[in-house]
Image (tube, rainbow, N blue to C red; front, side):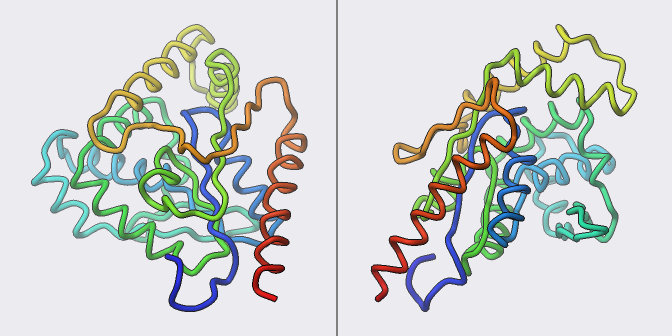
Length: 236
């Protein structure tokens, strides 16, 4: 991570609960900074989708190990949009259903899956110039990240956002059902044994409740630019 030559840029970790807007914010921030965006949550979702299709139970560690050994996850930019690929298939939309969301929480609690993706994430990010988002980036994947953010919003706000996303795709869930699902996901993610959702002690808290995307981005970009400036001065 650090050492072994100058990095291409900072390593930025963005953690937070489901529905906090991490994907939207980190993609936009990566575009502003000219950094690579690595959506670690999408990687876990891709494993969950592949397991579901293969009939592998979320608690079957041996089956999950075999599945991971044959799974290649990549990110491809098409028409300005970052697409999630699993063994060459575009699964960007397929991994964003409520069923996959809940299964992902189970899958992501399995050590065999976390170990597999941990190495993939570190390999993708160690050169710097990257923004990684997830639930344990600043505590487990890159505990020495140059900048750490903990992005959150109220459960009601996060549920409303998810409900609007699902409604736009034709999913027939009520707002109350969606808020309840977000709350259950919070409980699962915070209570799991391996790498639970935690705020890094040195993370900057960003509560996006009631804020526009640009307001959140402006605050985060200011912090990153200041860190870049300080590091540049230290190298002089």
